[in-house]
Length: 265
Image 1 (cartoon, rainbow, N blue to C red):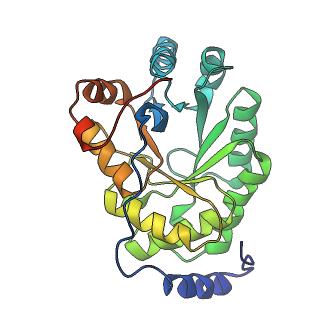
Image 2: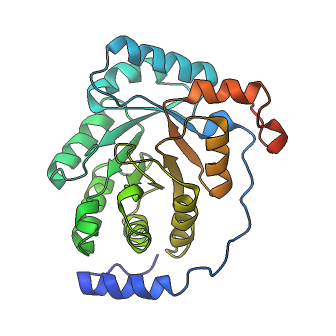
């Protein structure tokens, strides 16, 4: 990875130089995973949530062997009791959904989530500061959570692409990737859904960073067709509360002819 800028001006210059390297046309389409179930983060973030709903969420995730369940901090311990030792991970949102929480609060949430059994963290970046060009603060916020929850904990940075302009989305991708995240994630779903165009743009920008940063698409993905569009655009994970519905559509063959399959082995 290249040297980390130390001021907002240096960040702006670095980002501008990286933008010059962005592809002028679409790259080749990535291969579609055959195990669609292993791309899904089965999500329940509405409030209030009854504990029995967490039980059902985890039961469904284990039945379909989803990649992870994604819950709020207050439900991590209960979810962990279900998924610990299985193929399904446990993601907890951090600084959700506003992203404006003080860094110290995000660090506290991250540490507590990991202590209770979370294996993945989906943190909302300070996108309000990103929009103001305050890149250093955004970087330091993400980096603090990364340091508080080092590998093998998986860290996903939620960029809230729906409220960012195209150039700002590129900025957010570059800063988050360089802060050491494993994934960049489109959105919380609280301010609009994700688009395939956003996923593609994030992929282009991530490729400029000299590090391996994957993409999670989240927000408004409610059908097998929605999921397939995101995978074709370059997403490797899909955050959705409609995982069971999507898998039933796939098993019924609605998108199998387009190159997707479902395997639980």
